[in-house]
Image 1 (spheres, rainbow, N blue to C red):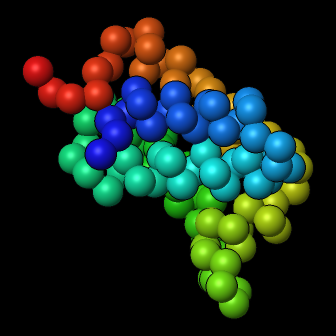
Image 2 (cartoon, rainbow, N blue to C red):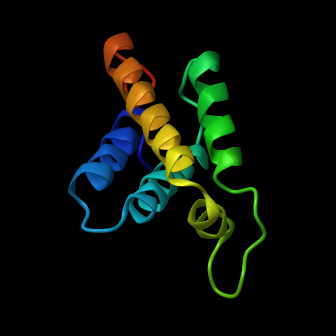
Length: 106
């Protein structure tokens, strides 16, 4: 299971390299971060709260058909809201790097 460093690096790769729309890339990035959250919490509390809020904000709407809550929510966002979520991901990864947070506890 990916730790925070690896999960956010993958999320950044998706945001930067995918051919999807901004909202499509945001879904992919949030899925990577969500998968990380299913394991042990490895982030300092301030970053963990930020990630928890991000994941809550991108999964508020009920699923429609086969799409999940994340897709349903992100697809209904205004472009500016999606851009704000991307900025949160970028800023969080920058802090993970600056603080030297490792993927696995020492």
